[in-house]
Image (cartoon, rainbow, N blue to C red; front, side):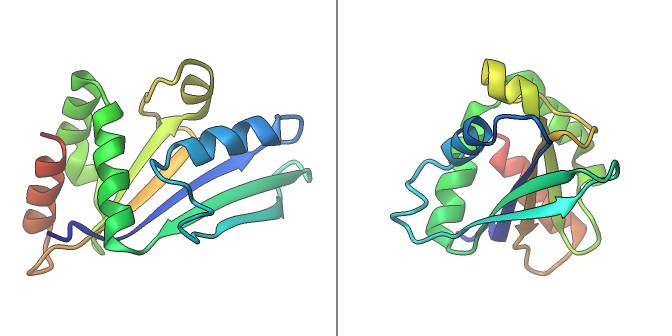
Length: 149
């Protein structure tokens, strides 16, 4: 069963942060070897609000086998409270194009391997394009709730 068309995982690395450490953690979110699977790690530099260079790391998952394994691994990492919070906020996290958004605090994940939801910008950002048919909010929510079981 296809639950998502694509997944984008992204993180911003601020000036002074350890890029190698963050990149290593970023890649560890994927339960397969990204390089061996020929999935591109996009790395670009952008100008931040304070006129300092910020690195952006991004991976796009487009193949169903990668998406399925990634989602299974991700939701297995979450504790019951986090799953309940996501379930309760599911409608707010879903846009009209059926993109489902999750943000996990960067420092809790880096330092404690703890998937703690956040609304702040300094985070591991995940966008899941839900594959609902027919394409509507209620069908997308059914898929999301099923992922959270």
